[in-house]
Image (tube, rainbow, N blue to C red; front, side, top):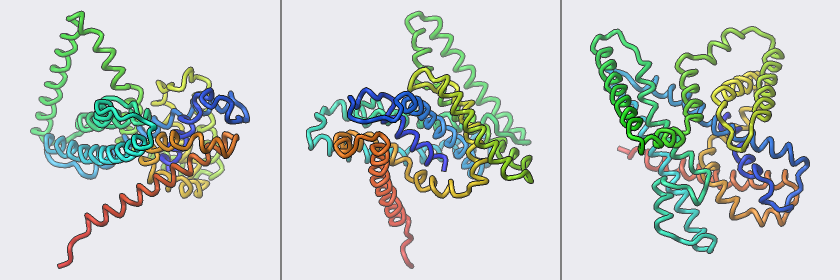
Length: 351
């Protein structure tokens, strides 16, 4: 459900964070508010990161056991499978759409540029694809983060854990000291922090943390027996408060530095509302199931259909709805093909 909401915010953010690109071709009911809401839509990245941290923690909790190194190894195996699954989707979508764009003459085929996009070294074909690399960074750090909070009464487990993280900390300290000592290398430290995009790592960490300590479960236990209208009122208050605060503070379309605070509150508000209005999950869940494909394809579709749709309507709302429908048709088709392929390859041969 949350991913379904996030993908709608993402599409609005990408379509309307700069209204000048339409050159008067669309009529906006209120340009200031459309722009502000588009900037607010950037929170979609935080929602995806939060859900990823939360969900992956639940997966590791069920599937990792044994000694310290065994748990660490299993954690990385799970994350590798998750990463490979996303990369397969990314490579297929990228290759398929770029063949269309090359053949129609919309893009010139430059082998070096194509392979740099294929290898996640740049995202010149589709700016939304930067999050593929970011997600891989999160998955790489996840087993280290999860292992740090793993506990056991076994002496060997604790000893291995202390040796591993002590060595990791010492090695990290030496590397940082070397970079600080050599003047020509100092600029790599802030550059590395920028490349890691710490703001989104923080949201991912908070999602993991709330799953690790069952924060939502604790909140709902404490509120059990409350009148449902109190739940609804608090949910609306949390959501409206986050929207108002973030829209007030955002100084650019890329604003995200406080999303590690905003996203958990917004998520809690949404969950409180859905406890009363149970129809909401059923509306957004289908979008969430194919959200990965909508994310990977929507800007390609936007580039291919933008002028066509603007010829049909001047209303920015109608333009948005049509673009969502195009994305949903293609994303839903991709998801359907994935399901068929999974069933085909996972089908056991009859004895």
